[in-house]
Image 1 (cartoon, rainbow, N blue to C red):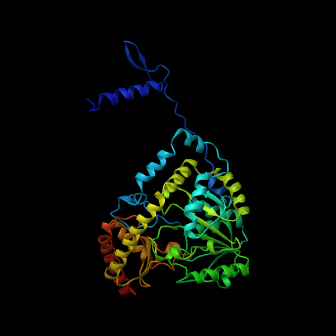
Image 2 (tube, rainbow, N blue to C red; image 1 turned 180 degrees about the horizontal axis):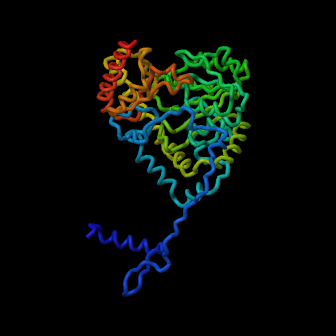
Image 3 (tube, rainbow, N blue to C red; image 1 turned 90 degrees about the vertical axis):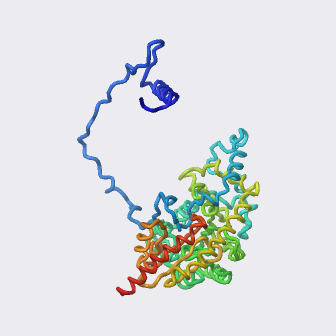
Length: 443
């Protein structure tokens, strides 16, 4: 009658019996339990308290990056930093998880670590990950975090109060700008050019500054080595703490990885280094790390313990095994080559489909920063493109004054299949050029 399989019906009955809704009488049948009684409906006339009046901060009123949760259903997702199924090393990751799922391994990572990290992951970071960026440190100079996001949040909480003068890139990472705005009234927006942050008077007046020297967020500019040296000298003169957010380290097979990280050039322990596996493997893994002097790490361990004790140790151990088996090096080589090939394809296509725009991509980056004519409304472009199955990111969200980036947008390409790039750019280019023409006529 119902078109349901016999086994399904039997399982449903058994579950209802197990949960006490039904009882089975031998050789008689199955009946509704006598203990079941209709739940009385209660209506409350009490007026609910307005807890919103008690909020001391309102994070929801800040400007955030927004991306459709169902972005994978769009045919042309030109988004940055999202999980790319085609790039994830599924079989090798499964091997690492299986290896860490034996009884002996489970006994090693299942216990409460309190404020410790998995020693295997710390060791693999020291041996195989950080040396690629020229960083050589001791185990007590590393702490594991829930992605780079938690690392940045803990730094803000440890070093910044209402009066701290904080230097931020503009344009820059919106979530960091929001964190800082909740912590201090003294955010200073640093001077930048095509080489990144300029070590000028504004920088010298800060007490702590956050920089993305590997690939500036969002313009992808790579800070040259000479500028990095000047930045460190300026920090020494001003007794300035620098936070290097190297959010996509290791992903590139191109020339920018030959430039030493800021942390590797730091002889005074003035640089705090933040890294993550979100861009390299998958955002859902939620594993990042922070490198600093021992006293800083000791304080951060206590702070992290108050928040969440420690990141899940099973994920830490699986990642450590993944790296130790050589899968990480193999993945970086394969992914880096694919990123470089996609970048070449986009760079060859953009001049033909968006002649009204100019763009930049730092070597090794997985996105292009596009600037249209001054009169272009990139928000409108984003909306029209989305309706046609194309996802790009508007550029104004990266600026403190969003009017500054109104004509900019970002094209990411780590999450879109190579076979869809040309078709997607052709459609996007038609939208952009039409809006440029209309805006010019109105202008």
